[in-house]
Length: 237
Ligand SMILES: CC(=O)[C@@H](O)[C@H](O)COP(=O)(O)O
Ligand SMILES: NCC(=O)COP(=O)(O)O
Image 1 (tube, helix red, strand yellow):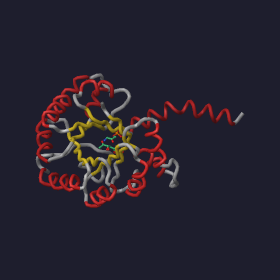
Image 2 (cartoon, rainbow, N blue to C red):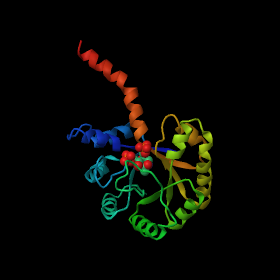
Image 3 (cartoon, protein in one colour):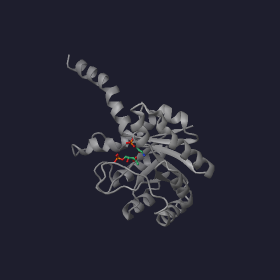
Image 4 (spheres, rainbow, N blue to C red):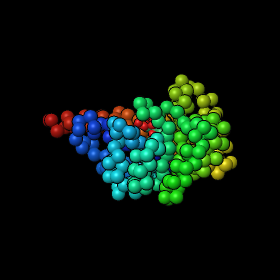
């Protein structure tokens, strides 16, 4: 069983573009769970350009499924996660100026740092996951950090799949198998979509969770727009 965790960053982006509270991210999180989502993911960035640290706090009472907070474990992020106590924290090595996440951890180079941060979260009852590229020595490195899970960075797969390259799945399958052998849980995310998710799921052994935001929100716009236009036309009659 693979859980779907909906990343609601884009809802905050839309809200922030007008400065008010529409759409309301807490209500949106409640609604996606009502519609069947098995988790809610947020990825607050230091510039708070989309989801804000205060949103992370406000969301806590309304997320009754899995609450996953992703981000670079800078001191303010660590403090936030320890305060909110989500189900899971996913550590992502974001550069401050990155438009979006664009690489996994070098789990070998940053082993000592990751060991310490992961131990701190785990001792506070928070499950840990670390964002990694599908590279076998990085999975070995992840095992050595003591993390509970890894999140496979799927941008490369999604990009190649869009050109019909199904072989792009191969490093992900090998990485997931190794993680399974090590007893590491396997999550995945980034640019997963209605187009590429079924094949990914069918190939990856032991896929526990996918977090999906950008494509899911874009697809929802397309699938909802026909209905909403009809509703406006009806009211304007
Ligand atoms: C780690 C990951 O792939 C996602 O959390 C993604 O980075 C979402 O962040 P943005 O919404 O800022 O693109
Ligand atoms: N961890 C990946 C995530 O939360 C969503 O990534 P994306 O679907 O917005 O690319």
